[in-house]
Amino acid sequence: MKTEKQRSHIHFKNTLWPLLALLVLALSFVYFKGILPDPKQVKIGVTYMTMNNDFYKTLNAELEKKTNQQGSRLYVRDPELDEGKQSQQIDFFVREKVDVIVINPVKSNSPSIISSLQKAKKAGIKIIVVDAPVSKEVAVDTTIVSDNYQAGVLIAKDMMKRLPAANILLLEHRNAVSAMDRIRGFVETIKDQPRYKIVSQKETLGQTEEAMPQVKSALDEGMDFNVVMALNDRAAIGALAAIKNNGLNRKLSIYGVDGSPDIKNFLATTNDIEGTVAQSPIQMGRKVAQVIELMKEGKSYDSQYLIPVHLVNRDNISQYTVTGWQ
Image 1 (tube, one colour):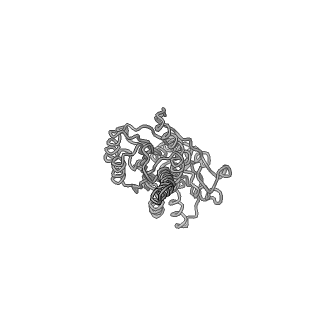
Image 2 (tube, one colour; image 1 turned 135 degrees about the vertical axis):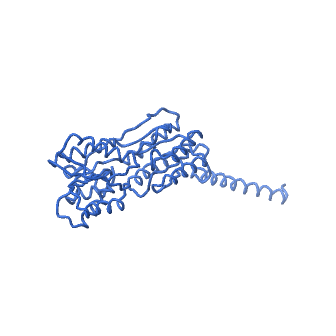
Image 3 (cartoon, helix red, strand yellow; image 1 turned 120 degrees about the horizontal axis):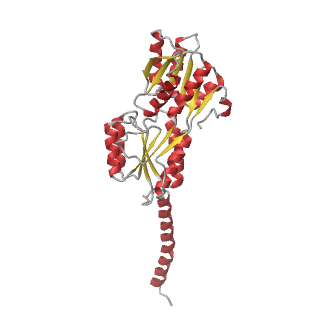
């Protein structure tokens, strides 16, 4: 016959085991939810030139969705078009011992960014460059970009089809290789056509708030132009705002690049925009996630991926989703 002390001991053991089981279950839940570090979890540092652009927000949202499904951890930073900040962010990723850095460089040949990326490579970190290439001084693992040169070619051809002659204002972002590739594609397509002349080139950083005063200044000076070729849709919207505020009564043809919802809405509902070339930040984000998965599995991948681009104008806008990106 068991004593009272023995019965108490058995009761304690019977009570303890369920509690221990619950504790193990709770810790497992915490572990798999990512609150405790997973030694097999891929850590990814991401820095785009700016998050003040829906293109990068959309790209990142797709990347975040896909990497969450893969169980990866994402560190996202915004350098706000400051190459010094972006360099510091890369250094932070190195200290955090990330496995992969995804970078859209503020300035492709920036010495500070190049130096920080070289340190990352020495630390064994994989580097994926998106939307704009970085200097060849950095041995990046892969580059994922839109066919930016072709974007400029498509705009030039559409302009020449619609207009017998043109005086052209270029809106640029000179530190961004992707932006200048678009301008180069446009300029080289019209170079042997004397009826199409570039009358001025303005630096806008690809931002609406920078493009608007630049175009206003050109209008105030009485500059004679009837086409605006903008490196991206944000600059094109800045040009449109300046033209509207000026009350200009002559027709100007405005082109952008991106295929953003704002520009597609203008194409669908007004005659204010002539066209844009659609990139796909969604496809780009998916491709980045696919390459990270290949890296994780030790499989081969290409050194460059070129994402196709498409001209969008009033003739074909009905084929596109106006409210979102492609």
